[in-house]
Image (cartoon, rainbow over the protein chains, first blue to last red):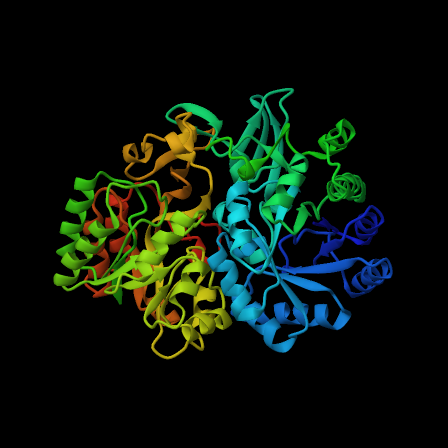
Length: 329
Length: 294
């Protein structure tokens, strides 16, 4: 089982490598990836330095080119793929089928990983991309139960990667336009969900308000922990009752499931958080490295120190096993 | 311009569904998409019932397409997709790439709105695999649609979602069951009580979303009735109307009159506003937020 860790910039990449990531994933400084945030991501020089740093230590680098290009911007996406191939990136993470075809034709040696944004939730979909474009690994959307993950893994030659820790999408990735609906920008098209420039926080007599493009996402009483205002994390009213209509803000933490992931045939675990600090990357990577190594050595047992370290970095007031355990089933 | 009736996204009692499609047989609509695309737990109609409705609509001169479920999680879900693909009579709308794998090589299938075909290269791919119609993603802008269609493969039709509550997201979780503090697998089929979805308002009372089981829709209604000329200019030949519990036939008649030049875009929009379950919006088409009216 391999560990795949995020890097929003060079210091985070080094932190991931130094603390035991097998793969580090990153993106370029534009809308070709799904963390298109100001001040984040890699230019050519940082990418070359990051590749050198990782490769010198026997680790691999993944570049996310996982938003959906349109006619007028198509060449920016193909240029990103070309850069990945030219600079020696070990694999690219792709969502758009047309872009996969381009990469497969022009850079047949460049390994392709299916992005979670491709919304491939069944082995039929994953095998389609394998047969058409030689996709080697698929990142599963965060909707499948553990048994369903195992079922998918049994029916495909493609390596299965799952999210293990970090912020959690409630909706199927790649099939959510809630952000576009509220503010005109969304992960599929512009690479950002609830972009910071559309978010406003305001103290009012009724409490702290969070708004997205003017729409009230939530209002917090003193002492209540506020969540970043994505549409799916808000409180809304139905028939007079105001509640978290989709899910209480929570982050994913599946560390205790490492042995079950192994049994299910999971080949890689992914840590979310390219927008997080190098300290987050360092500590979360170290804990997961230790946990995976303990499992490989046949002596995995959850440690209180691991839980404490991860809890410090969880977003929201609690953590969840998400769809893997389906408490809402 | 042709009109299509999209798949019924909501869960209605069996008799209501049968009565609805009986009306549609007489409504001015060219194509009718049938089948359950949202939730595999819904069972008021069996697959055979959908085929029977399809046969009736085909006898009334409608083109019938079977829509495949958008989110597949289990082997049971895949079985439903395989049944649709193997139905032997009607065209099939693929709504995920698993369905595309099953349809590849067959001709005449429809690349549905949930496939994420955003550019000419991906359109070319699905056309090579046998698709002869593309339904644009709901969030498609005019620029996107025109761009995708600029070099379209021969004989490929384009369809745009033009009227109805906008499908915005799918999840593994059921938000209708959640509202009622029920487990998904013990939901009591609560969707039956919300024939146009369960409305959600913001904490200051602004209508915002509508919950439909595992699907989230807009509270407002997408309406491109006054954009028919622009749609045609972009290369779109079919406008999709999404079923609603009341006045769907009226909405189709209004749009038909607008397409035929008997009603101005302004008047069509006004008439549709009177039968819509929410405010009319068109932001996506204009490259803006979906819940805006340009």
